[in-house]
Length: 498
Image (cartoon, rainbow, N blue to C red; front, side, top):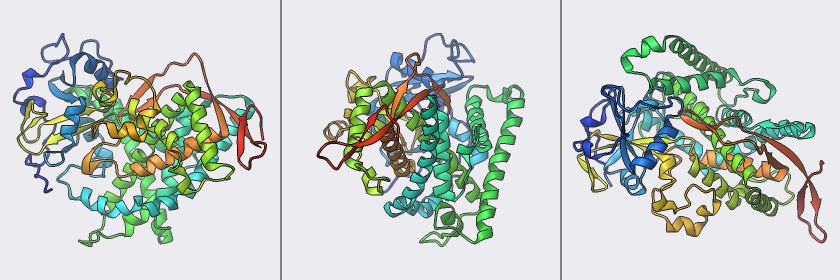
């Protein structure tokens, strides 16, 4: 189907909802709206996603919020979200939070506007880097990085110490994307503190989030010191990537990884190459997006496995059955962990680490037959609430249940109800990479450890454009492989060492 063009021209800053929704007054908003300021009373600026989730439960599947003169429309109903997924009528909108990252990521794959040609060029050049053959090539490096994690956890288990789950998952996923994509080793597991790249990355994400909560005219004044830190963070990210590219050029190429593709591959039809500036932006995009969201997904999954020992036992039994006594699982064996993958999907359902995506109208249209929209009008899809819509997920949608993703349950649900990676042509290019990595790591950790939760811990979610469990610590206990009588299948048992 030929897609309708987006007839809004080049972006000209934030487009408030009243400019594109002619019947905006029909859409509910929170009570106690204050003139000029909007819906700001009682708002927690550090948790805007969770605040919006609370409003969503009260106001329904389409609602609006206003802050400092900016009006936003939120959508989370399954029916409305499915309509927004229609690529003939809607396209990606680079929302305010994402646009705030453009000073560092520019026209990278995640932050490019639809009219910018480098998105299609980069997508076509890099898509083969996520093919099945490419993924199989990354698998041994993923195993190698995972071994560094398990060596770290083995030391903690031997000492009876708890581990910092989000911190360790961040180290793991940063090293994985750095090594598989760019042939670089940050040495994260040899550091007692986060790598400076991670510190700078968290700084830029946090600053981008803060910009959403400050009146634009006052931002330079109120965020003066934060702005200087952000400039320093961006400079560090740029310097790190420039050095990485310089080292690759000095050796004349690598093993055909993503960086080689960025530097050497031409577009199959036009013969174009990515510019040096765009290469830098794409590398930053992949290093940030390629590890931040996956580390959050793994952290939430490990939290739920530790809280639900019966689910962990079922997942562990699958790993023991499918992988047996294989020292290192082969690439093909990872996809056979179907229940482990359901655990991951269910974790992403409740806490999609990229918690929202925006869609804009390509033409005059009516959302779900109810709300007129003009070209360029946009809505923010609140993914954690879409994933909790009882019309799609049932009355127990808040409950953690991996069986929601068995094949029959998936077939029985309407399309477009599970969107942790966005939707349409602009959905995450690396989603299969992330899913393979996360399933592999969960399988390895389940096979090797029993995961003990702190009974006093209650899940808290921190927000920095992405979502992450805050303060999550687990105590790993080693399992030793043994042979069952009359069987060649080695099955680890808890409570003993090697």
